[in-house]
Length: 153
Image 1 (spheres, rainbow, N blue to C red):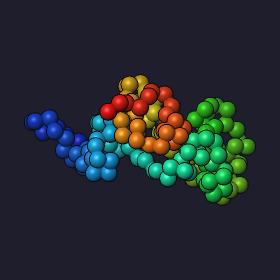
Image 2: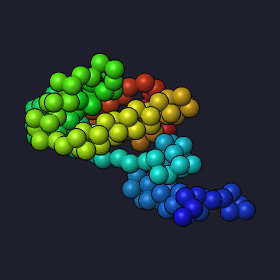
Image 3: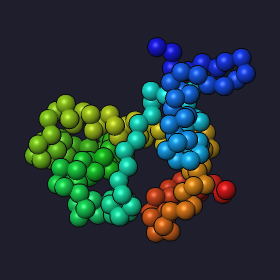
Image 4: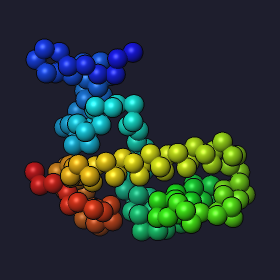
């Protein structure tokens, strides 16, 4: 299957065109990161929490708003993101203690690494968060804004 192709007029076709259409419908505009990752649509995957839960997780309070398994996953993901070389067998054992299999732990680690990759690429290419994020609750916006400032409309 071809992930994307340009037609003679420079428009996207295939999976990238479908992705662009879906994001335009979902967000009401085409996000900057979609334009960047549209060149490799298989890289993109997202999952969203509600504003209250997102703010609590961003503030380091995952344990207060998530179930114990998800809170432990967030704790581990934070460790991997900050310093993967500092992760110990004890950290992995904590995931096993809440019921994750070795396959689950690998999946979590790969997802964290993919997210780090995603963020690094956006930063390196100077992609700002989309202006639509200016409409977020100011406290939530502040908790989520890391790196480049949100683009102005």
